[in-house]
Length: 372
Image 1 (cartoon, helix red, strand yellow):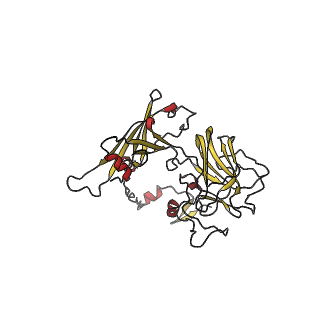
Image 2 (cartoon, one colour; image 1 turned 90 degrees about the vertical axis):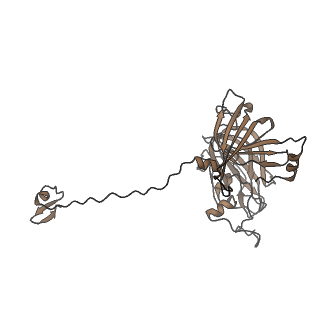
Image 3 (cartoon, one colour; image 1 turned 120 degrees about the vertical axis):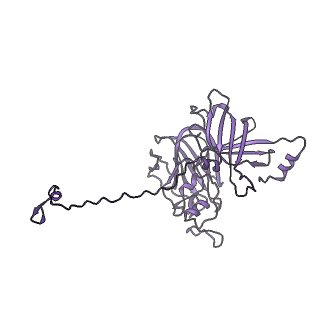
């Protein structure tokens, strides 16, 4: 059963003037389906996790305890340590460096960007400041979004965001001075073939604190509505028993979404599109219906197939929910392989003995002597 808001229920129950709307969100950069994304940093505090800066979660779960003297007994929490805690709680990345009394991390006299990417140290030796990077397959970036620590109300004041291509060349640099927000968001001119995003932090919002980043990977997630949508078809399948109430039965679902290929954004050969290289199997699809204010999700699906005709005005994506994907996956039971029966050789005659070949030994009467 789907629970709907009262306002939406009222809209549905109207006999006249009823006008329901549809929209669909597609996530093209889910790190759960893209194992090419990797993060690294100059230093990383124990029990903080680099992989959380690109998992799509922008808010920190709690004001985590730090040994910088800023935590308060009873309100702060111990950082997650186990895999189960890491999956449940968000802490993001912390550097090990503490900001100076003026809240800076080093004298800002010059900036030196290196040429290395994919795990190399791209920052020069002139400055020693906290820095964290995310590497990914070549893609187009049109906006920058950095989230700091909303639980401790801490953020970077002065910082640089640098975009690199696969040769290590700098494609774009965003220099920020005097930031006062927990999230920094800015649209930029489209930069193509970006493979690395690096954040350099020069000044923090408080003295004696570590740099903290909850999220910095620029995700690609688009919301389609109105004239962007040609049609949405959601089907739920349920296998029922021959008789009785279907308690405990599982349901699988499928959605088929037809979208307007506006400005040829979905074309595989459009290198200028922000979707270039990110349209693939596994993209998250969330269709919704509503009255324009309240929306009800029809489920979460994952792209199984894209039908993109460069000569057509529309594209079609077919998605399956997790239950349907499980039904299509191949499962093999364990097989027990018996060991072969041992082969026993018995030499019981002098002829068999004399017919053998001795290596490294010679016979001496009824005994064997090794050759040294």
